[in-house]
Structures are given as structure tokens and as C-alpha cells.
Image 1 (cartoon, rainbow over the protein chains, first blue to last red):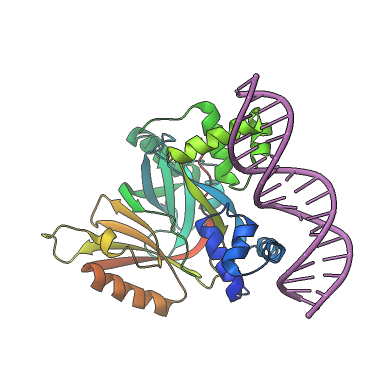
Image 2: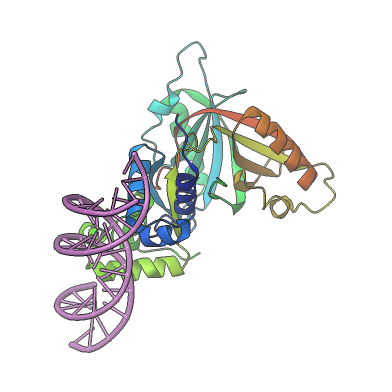
Length: 149
Length: 149
DNA sequence: GTTGAAACTGTGATTGT
DNA sequence: ACAATCACAGTTTCAAC
């Protein structure tokens, strides 16, 4: 994976903390003209360094107040583990990481209630033929902080 | 926490998957006029339901290819645990969740190398007076998927 | 919520360095 | 190759309705 130079890193950092910043303002903050910034952003997007833009949402207001981390392990370890594929269409799953250690994958999920989590766990177990271990999030002091590039 | 109505949920979901979508396009997709959408988005921002906008970044290209989850527990459990405050200025920490279970907090961090992780762990331990347990991410099949509102 | 008008921004072509 | 300038289309923003 090819790296990015200083000016690009600065642009990426600025867009990571404010994804709707205008090219004009990016230009002021980086000392470039609007169209120079525009070109650079387009190249960053094409190279996949900027993968997209997302609104940062308050999940409580969306009636998804319960966050949990679920680590999963196949019931039958002799089979190849394609859990990410099998779970791709489970909408409650926000993140899926392959991890080193006792379990194979760590999922981050958002649900409405403990009851919904119970149902989700059953769905995950049956879809991927895995055992699950859950870690309930009580509160989130901070989240999605931009990278210190 | 007060909920949001259907039209607002639709707008939030659209902005969660494309944070730079124009008000004009949002209007087309929701059947509203541009300025009606604009007003709703402004109110969603003011109510804190939309907390901000962020570019979704490729951390490998930013030379932060190593992601880890670190769970922490105070060395001295009799003291009040203000770890999030003590760790607030550690830039490698992307998320900080208070969790139920053996440990108090779960941190998500991004670093350059195993060596950088080792140094970060030492920094976290000394700043917050905690013991740490780390889970290394090997790969990430998917991440930051928008909520299925 | 809608319409319409004014200011600003995004976008591409062109030119200069 | 990269940046600056200009021109036009599209968008944001704020009136008044």
C-alpha cells in the first residue's frame, strides 16, 4: 500500500474530522487553491485512501441504544471459517474484524434492547454455526475520533 | 432520548451511507424540496442526532496498518476510575467504551507497528494506572456499516 | 413545506510554472 | 506533473409566501 505525502495527510485529517468541509475552506487551511485541493481529494478518493463519507449518528436517537461486542468461534473448527460472508446481510453488525486469540472474529453490533440482542445472538449462531461471547457496552465516553496523522 | 420520525430516519440513514449527498439529491430521494431537507438536516444537527460528518479513511494508506482492541482495568480498584479523562489526549485511541465484565473499558487503537503498540500500551498503563489486555486485529472484512434504520 | 432569487461552491477546461 | 485562474452549472442559504 503506497503512502501519502504531507499535504495529502493534512487534507485527509481535516476531512476525517469534518467530512463536509468545502474545498474552499480546505484550501485556506492548507494554503492551496480550491482546484488544487479538489484535484488532490479526487485522487485520494480514486486511490481508495478516502473510502467515502459518513454522517456520525447518535444511535440512541435512532432507537439503537444498546451496543455490544460479540466474539465468535466456529462450533466445528475443522471447517473453513467464512463467517464474514455468512453474516454479511445481518444489518445489526457494524464492524467485523478477524482477530488473533481464542476467537476468530470480533463483531460490533447495535440493537434496540437486550431482548433484540438475545434474538441477534441466536441468528448469528445459526447463520454462521459459531459459538458467541458478548461484551455489553454501558456507555461510550468517546468514539470515531479522527486519526492523528 | 427523544426519537425521530420516519422522514428524518430516512434522511439520517442516507447521510450515514453518503455524508456528502447534496440536499437536492436528498430531496429527490425523500420526496421533499431542497430547503425542506435542509431545514430538517439543520434540526437533526442541532438536536445532536447527526453529530457530525467524517471521511472514511484507509488506515493502511495513512501508515496505521495495525488495529487493536485494548481492555483496561485499574491496578487499584478502590480508586474512582477516570481512565477516559486520563487517556483523552492519547491520539492513537479511536474509541473508548465503558463495558460490563472483567475489565472496565475497551479501547480501539490504530498504530504503525507492533513496536508502536508496545510503546502505546506502556503509555496507557502509566497514564491511567491500569493493567491492559490486547486483542490484535488481523484483517477487517467490513467496518463502519451504516445503521439499518 | 414550497417557491424563487442571491451568494457561494463544485467542476472542468485552459493556461502558466 | 502540479497549481492558478476563469467560467458555468449546481448547490446552499435565506427570504417571503
